[in-house]
Image (cartoon, rainbow, N blue to C red; front, top):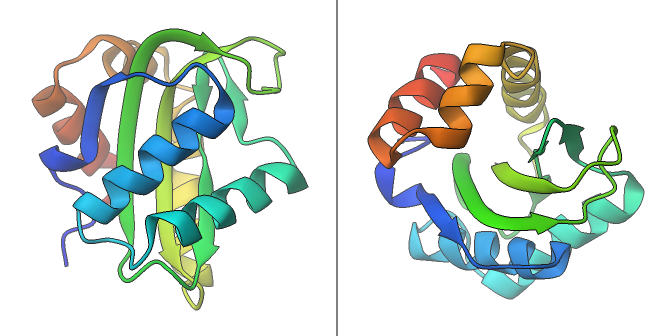
Length: 147
């Protein structure tokens, strides 16, 4: 099982709203064979956002959901030029996302990934590379954290 690959990275996200971005991630998850239903996974991502924001701050959000629609653990990364309102912790818009996909029964894996990435997002060099790197650079960067 490969948690992340280059086809799960989109550096040209088109969405201008939280809903549009979450739909893009749900469709990307389906294309990557990580979910059984884009619509179902989108619904679970949206429910998680309604609990509390996944906006980390500094222009980054970590949308995630444990979902019955997720068929295998995955990490997707997106970046766009649109500044998207996300209710982030610093009240700033978001243009870079790391989306975590975890099966409903994957509680420990969910916490492990979220913890590892959250810690790394405190590193200015990591954040700068995430925001400006190529797909290959992002893949190498994130795989180094989650492996």
